[in-house]
Length: 93
Image (cartoon, rainbow, N blue to C red):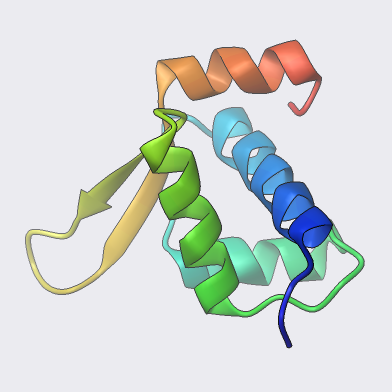
């Protein structure tokens, strides 16, 4: 299902808050999606691709960083210092 622009914006905010609250760790898109769905952090269905797209958007804005695994094809995401400050400013974490 295609997300609306508002849904995409909401998902980016929720993911930024999630990553910023746990800024010492990095998470893959599958783990982020599973946690958000379990906690009902959004009220619309999301796919792993939606999470990856949101994380890439945050990375392009300097709010997150992408970490590629040295051992394989896994990709992890972590909030940057700028991302943590932005999340705190918005009350996301």
